[in-house]
Image 1: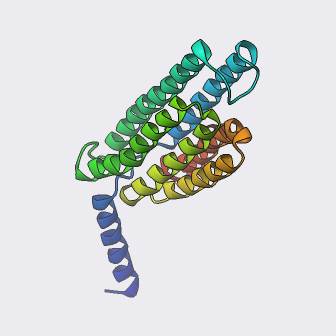
Image 2 (image 1 turned 90 degrees about the vertical axis):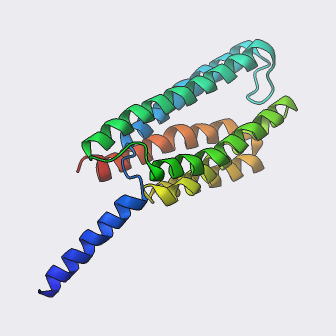
Image 3 (image 1 turned 180 degrees about the horizontal axis):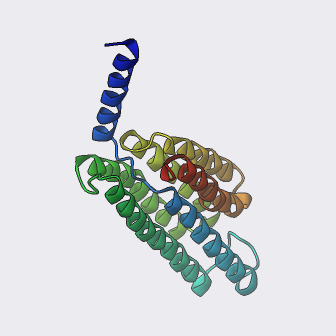
Length: 203
């Protein structure tokens, strides 16, 4: 066998090992749509707060607050449903199992930081410290992406790093938390989802 044959065999073995230990059927399109959902939700929340509260982005109460929370929940649900549908479709196309030990590990490592972060944000909101929640959401979501990247496409950890950095900036400058949230969950999802789509989905 020539050196080229050896290198080809090694590459094939490496690809098989990578597929067996990582869930690689995440859809870039689902990231784009999640970013669009976030931008639409942010626009609705901005309109409500500016027109039906005291006009600030981090002091609001009553029905405006609960409506914004409902919008946030709707964004999360829509993003999750879209991600499941598009990822399932891509997994079938790639002849990859949608639910096995790798995808379970991926989900577990993603949900632990996300659930802890969600509970902590609820505590912060209950204390009326609205200005901190945007930064906390970004930080815990970024940690969830970095944690899950060990069992999926490694590139998602870079999106996680960006979210963490944006979250730390938002924590230091809480007055800009809303706009940094928009940048992280909206714009960065669209940018990163587009890049992932053309790198992985169009092959």
